[in-house]
Amino acid sequence: MRASRLLSILTTLQAKGHVTAQALADECEVSLRTIYRDVDALSAAGIPIYSERGSSGGYRLLDGYRVRLNGLSSTEAEAMFLAGLTRQAADLGLGAVAASARKKLLAALPAEMRPGAMRARFHLDASAWFTEGESLSLLPLIADAVWNERPLRMRYRSKAAERERKVEPLGIVLKGGVWYLVARDGGGARTYRISRIGQLDVLDKRFEYPADFDLEAYWAGSTRRYEAGLHPNRAEIRLSPRGIAMMDAFLPPYARAGAEISPTVDAEGWRQVTLSVGSYENAALDILRFGADAEVLGPPDFRAQMAEITGALAKVYA
Image (cartoon, rainbow, N blue to C red; front, side):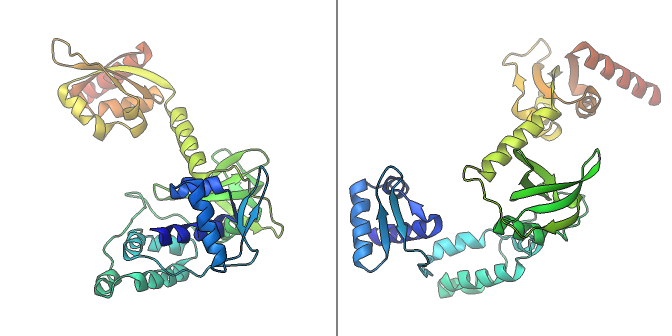
């Protein structure tokens, strides 16, 4: 147990550079006194760990010192094999590097498990159904700029216009089979679809990566704001028991998540549902999928539009 903790302290210091004793204690789930003893033991073993006093003090390794650690456990190596990101690594220009890493992971597995690990058991297909692949010729260059903190000058084609932009790349996200660049453009972070980037130049100078930026947190917040923007209206509908069961299949995830379903049923066994929708024209297409198992109650404009559409359909099929 202690050996594992000492290894964890070393890898944390190597990855983060400077870490406080309290942060190490929290990560290892032990007391500060235990961390002090562990650091003393590492120093006694010849590991060049230095302490810094003061309010911003902590521990760090001697500059340039690297710990060569190959001690992956078999279960850790198995977990890494679950990723199955072969295609995505190739898109990023890291196909050869990923192959080399897999060989090293393979060496960490018990001998009896290696033949099975050589054959793919898990495959991740991140692309969306019924779509053609996007042009990703610039993705390796962008990934290199993200990693090395180099600004980009690019021509970006938005829905409105095409213009030149100078940005500081902060991260790359793969969502629903589409690659996105998250970058700082003068002010805060913004999202760019990589397939819409035209001419691209990686600039020589480096920028300082914002210490408080969290890519995962940014993306989660950006996704919520985008979905909310697509569903600015509220609608009231009635659904039959069969319609309630069809909500998961026919409503967008954001609309399902925010739907309020009445706990009581009316005389016909139907329930009233209040949910967020986009434009009434698009919302009508979603509700029409329910057929006769849904009725729009309001707002009046939405109900009128549904009446107009269903009336036109009735004439077509008369």
